[in-house]
Image (cartoon, rainbow, N blue to C red; front, side, top):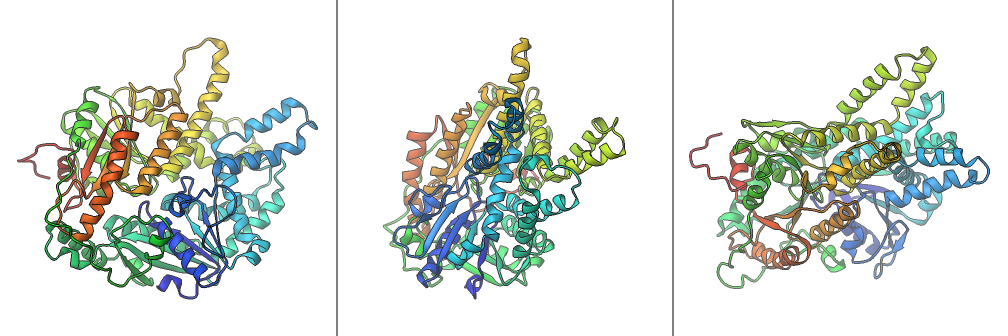
Length: 592
């Protein structure tokens, strides 16, 4: 394995959601521990499933992995980190400063900005803690999906530069945060990330054009901030032998090999490892230890002729029910890599094809809506909540309003405050709120960011709701907040997307629990890319199909109020025509 050659202290595993970052990070941790190394595996994903993969509870504290000497794991919990951060800042002044001042500090630290800073603070501590480095020879980071990982890895430089240039109080860091100490730590984190002797970035992808393009973009963006020591791992490639007699497997093999042959230019110079698809879920120590084995797998018993095809509700049935309302917000949520973008696009084009006005948008920084659509359709408009664009627009709006009456010194302070990385969180939330309001007159279909960051966005929505209730409740005025619209089933339908595999279903169930805690009841589940719902004679795919049946049964009977199952297709559902077919639209004469 090239990515394991002379492994440095820090290994970052990143890539588009669902490519197998967590499995690969866990398997690598086991491999290094088996060589007698002391290893700490850290998840920076707000929706971490490292504990689920190992079959243990981990949480926001270092936990030894049973049965693996030398290996410990840690999941950075943004909410727990934020509470600890607030306690460190507010605790020393409680009972010292007036209650009103303390309350003001608490309100200042109650937003999503503080949540991000707190998690980021833990991340930089791992990069700079010399005592921790003496304890562990390797620290592996299983990161959030690409867009948010890029932001995380850019933040040390962003905060370091912000504090270096700052002439006033960086209020979002808290009034007693010790800015000089923060500046030194962030600069040390920048230095560690940029040192190729200490840090290696492992770009994880699947043999699919979209994930490889995403890997190429990540490669370029992170190389631009100094992370140039990179490797590429293409995971889950179907062995060519599986396509010998099975048309579906042959089609999958053809498109995967074509994707590998057409690697984006930026990736071709990187060391490359290719890992074969396994016939089992990568959960538990025994399965993980087999992931890095690239030798031909033992033949899977065929078990007879064609397996019966699963009979399950189709996506078309869900679209029929959605269309009856005439307008509303449809949010597709779920773990990265389950096909949220494809499903959102399929629902949107199906509604537009029926004559409804539809706006399709995404809050995922790494989404590829236009590439998925690959065409246009009457009644359908498309947008993306681009963090850079909405942040710049927000800055200009604030400068034009709040900055209009300020003198030169005051305006300079305002501009400095708006350079804070926290400004992006506020701007994205405001753009999200505008999208929600538009659903009162048309269909708005939203492809959301992977689970953890969608929940952070909902946290911001909830914080705003509580603030409005405090301000308006006593005045007896009628008001509607974005959270109230999300909680109203007549206005919002949440579709939870998943795969028929152990970890994605468990992740989806956890998401449903979190949504219910926020007063949002998911409307339906969609099981995507199901082998059990397709026809295959490939022994490996048939084994995966048998594994799926238990998970689909759990979705249908334990988790979902209603559900649909979308089969694995021989051709990727890219383009308006194929998306309409995916959604069950009959289009014998349709041409793209």
